[in-house]
Length: 283
Image 1 (cartoon, one colour):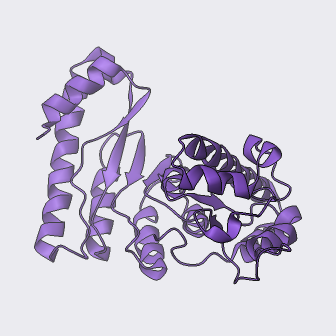
Image 2 (tube, one colour):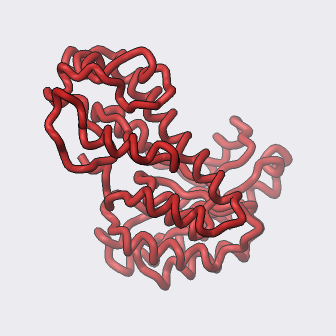
């Protein structure tokens, strides 16, 4: 379905959100030539100008916060141009678009910093598609405030449970669990999630993660979740979603705690404990 700016704004007017993002044309330069990336920046700015004009003429829309999209793929100059031009418009915040699992960490970090360096610190910055907590830390260091991602859903649909470090107090226990250090499971290399489809968990009656206080870990075992997965019971996804959301929210709570600390060493210690691989959610 082709969505015009007018059609999109009619939907916004009907739903009356607290905040909405301007329509954008986001592409990755990994699969598109420079000409296409430049066109995406021009088109996104044109969409934003049309959105601002429609918002100004509608009292309902004026009450909704507007976020401008920053696009440009992996092209440094286009990212900066998109950010610089968007800042000139009267928007209430910014959304950094165009990241996916195919980006290397180095590319992600460089492009993200090039975009955020132009944005005013007084305005909120959002980002879509951040899948690993390691990338979340990189985004935080670049000044990103709000994260939108399907990482919990992706892990849950793959039958996986998060086991990555999410607070300094449980780091040792987490890593012990990640190695599968139980009587019935052979030692395995450190990981940041476990795939409960694996038959090795069929007789593992320990919780998904020792010390986790989610409903799933308190009441059920790895063996039970494995059984639900192989029998295709919908309860498996429900219980895994509980655990994965709880674990990720604890990670964010710990991250906020270390960011409030006046000691930079607290954050550096937290970051060093994470040590996430580049794309730990690749199927």
